Image (tube, rainbow, N blue to C red; front, side, top):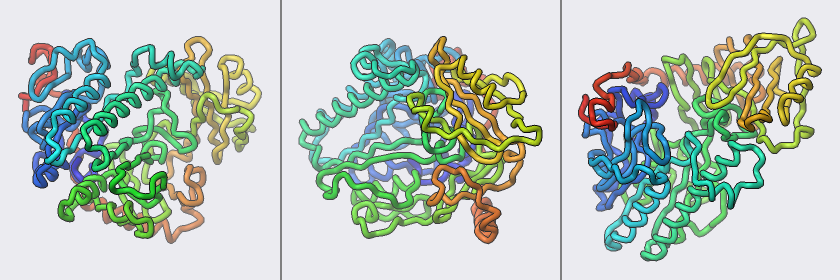
Length: 474
């Protein structure tokens, strides 16, 4: 939305909380604001989550002609009630009470269908549609699960599949609306993720390492596709050039016929995407700097440098349906002949520390008596991973063991071409590369804007606004 790295906006530490006086800085020109200078009509449906404590930070003040959706990070898909029992759903500036009881994907899809139907084809159109799906809590009408997902054994994965099916239906309906209006051939559709999936909520990033909210590739490497019959002649082709989320704004502005945007972290990739022989417009990028978590990561060419602890979960989590026999379970024993582990079992979106104990392959087999499947995944040094499904509830369970010595390393260096799954730290093998990347990391750090992550403000509470989350308290 901005074309800037979060650490240049003070937004690098975790996601915004509903009760914080924090927001996308007001002096930032957003993507819809750029497009409006080119004559575009701009509409949004879905999740905002860029701050709302003052009306000036809400969608219709940041470039959108219309908006239906919610301000915060998470809420019930039907009641639209979130944190502190506050109702969070708007149509433009008005509280949209009629939405209560209707599944959010239906509302967003129908709103955009109407926008398309009412649009004047002589004017350019921009639609931003960040669905609530498939963010937690995992809720979906049962018929999607019954029709498309009954073959999936794991309960949470089955529900997750239902959310994807509902999302897919919405995208299909909007596509047909574009076709009916005669806009389809002249439209660029960008479908993209914003981060890796949270493995504790049935998402799966296998074979990438880690989870949402970590600096591992499983938390940061996204997938996307572009579609546009008028623009892309080589359909079905993959673009493997280096691209970062901040590149989408200048890329789309150029695609819309706008000028080259300068002074941003993002660069336009439009020519590279259109022409297979044109290399990516970038050779490096910043994953993030978080001075509160004391970690950072950058990419230069094929190398990735991590500083500090990249975050947890930090393992590799095969899908529940993976054949256990296909996964190696070798590990390096500790001095006593048994690796020391810290067992943490996830259930119902929280981690509970159980015990610190010694474990052998024999006791691992006894764990298998408690779980439907146990996957012992090889890693390096003395790290052993388990992924399983509990018989009683079929909820996702993760048992993880991590070397304390590994966590104490100041830096980690990975060759993502040779090792895209981040198994082998190569800093000892390539000390010159390490030195060069650490120096580059420090150059990037000089432009860091301190994180704006204030304590909660009781003035924000829904009890002050008739039970709703509302602007007007900063």
